[in-house]
Length: 169
Image 1 (cartoon, rainbow, N blue to C red):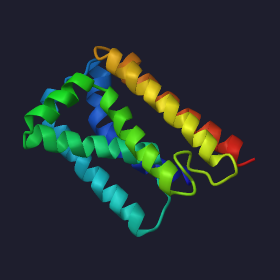
Image 2 (tube, one colour):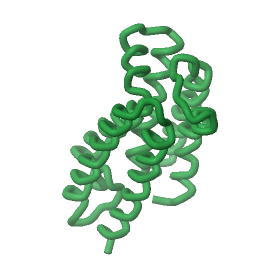
Image 3 (cartoon, rainbow, N blue to C red):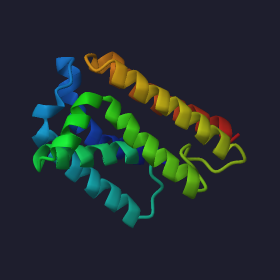
Image 4 (cartoon, rainbow, N blue to C red):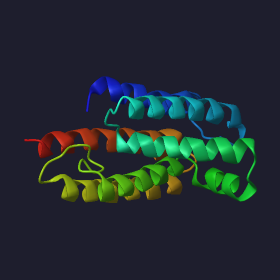
């Protein structure tokens, strides 16, 4: 996967997260406008990359799924989904990543890892377990965006890249 593609895929998440990280807290219930903007960016970027047939970062596709659910639940609004999003806080992004990771692992040769090798399936499963742990961690720490969500988000993405490089050797 090309690094520039991943940088572009980070734009929607960063659009939503920047304000939370600076403030040091998550209040998803007042972020309807940012969710909508981030979701529109996500759809445009994913569609553009798919049209160009560019391999995408499965973790960030999952993050985009979370952005879409948030945009709809906070702007329509859909009460039970909105409540679940608020309760999950930053953990919701890992749930979205887990769903995308499961899909990619089951259907794509590069799996959740993003690399085709003899180790892809095993390392994708390990990454899924780590993503599930990150989701539990983030949901258990809803009051700390930095510790609860930002740190695990960075950690999972770095691990994915390191594991992908190791698998491709």
